[in-house]
Image (spheres, rainbow, N blue to C red):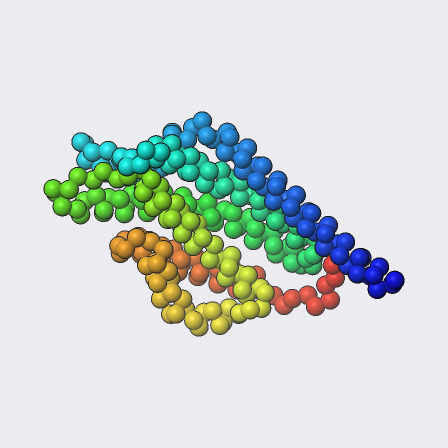
Amino acid sequence: MSSTTESSDKQQPLVQHLLELRTRILRSIVVMLIIFAGLFYFSSTLYEFFSEPLRVFLPENSSMIATDVASPFLAPFKLTMVLSLFAAIPFILNQIWGFIAPGLYRHEKRLAVPLLIASVVLFYVGVAFAYFVVFPLIFGFFTSTGPESVTVMTDINSYLNFILKLFFAFGMAFEIPVVTVLLIWSGVSTVESLSGKRPYIVVGCFVLGMLLTPPDVISQTLLAGPMWLLFEVGIMFARLTSRKPEEAEVKP
């Protein structure tokens, strides 16, 4: 009888955690859908805004095209959905934080809050860097190197897939300082160890740049260069803030 009671006591907190997780996931989905509902009316305008870096380089007699019947609707729809996810990231991370915070030590909470804020800001900075810096350079390069007999008329769905891939690539690449700090603060690595592996990390940045971007030197370098610099920023920040963990810490 006692073993049955102990088993039910152990299962009850697990059920409560699962119910809380479901509630937070549903909240995140609802918030994203609310944002989507507010942006959907402007979906065509949003697509025009995000296609501007390419359209400014198109010849005077050229324009973007839709090769699929549903593309004029689906491409802006898909873009609006992704933008809704991007806009909901702070709320989603807040829900994740609310779920895991009770299980963290006090010093872990002090470290986690600024890292969460930094991760959101860096992701947005990476997306903005791709739009304002990378896109004008690579689209100017692509449209100016083709044969004169070929008229550039890009499909709107292909263009959307292309820019979303770069948005995610640069957004995640700009999280390198956060990852670097976490590796050091968690004890997985040290400042000295990561600093000694700098040549390999630089090569790795260029390999990732090659895999995550189109096959041209400009976009590869524009991703690999910031990744390397952000790694150095993470090393510098970890060196300034590193300290011995509090051994006698207890959960609040």
